[in-house]
Amino acid sequence: MKTVKFFFAALVCLFVSATVCSAHDYPIPPAQLPAAAQSFLQQHFPGKTIVYAEKDTEFMKVKYEVNLNDGTQVDFDSQGNWDKVDGHDFVTVPAALVPAAIQQYVNSTCAGATVTKIDKERYGYDVELSNGMEMKFNHAGAIIGYDD
Image 1 (cartoon, rainbow, N blue to C red):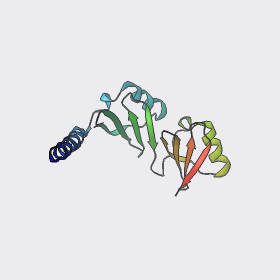
Image 2 (image 1 turned 180 degrees about the vertical axis):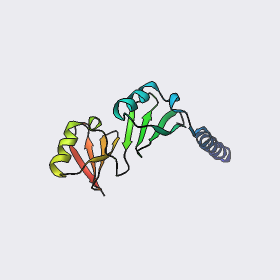
Image 3 (image 1 turned 90 degrees about the vertical axis):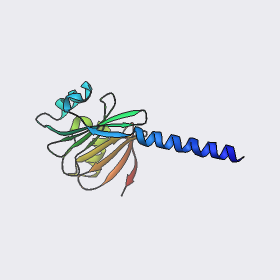
Image 4 (image 1 turned 30 degrees about the vertical axis):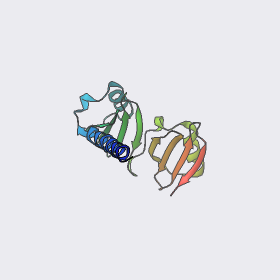
């Protein structure tokens, strides 16, 4: 019985250390971003420059994080598909990135507020507005909840 417990504990320690050791975040030149990410940035953020790009390698997963000169942060998956656009409460997310149903809901319930963050989630989208309100929407753009 002691041998089984020792083996299990050793296995857990090995797995945890392998996971921790395999996670690396390091800066990269913008040219090393996936082509889809570079194209996305040129299309949706014309005139903005990349001030910092980072490649995040986690256990069997790669992500990219880009910071633009206007303060916007854009996260991409390993293929260069956007995952999150965050204007940090003062930069509006490009309208083309906000699904029409979500934009319509925001316009009708929060007049004058703009979307400053949109984050793709398994259930749909997390959205933050310039007035501080945070909302959750499903993939169809229907409201499913509010955050504080």
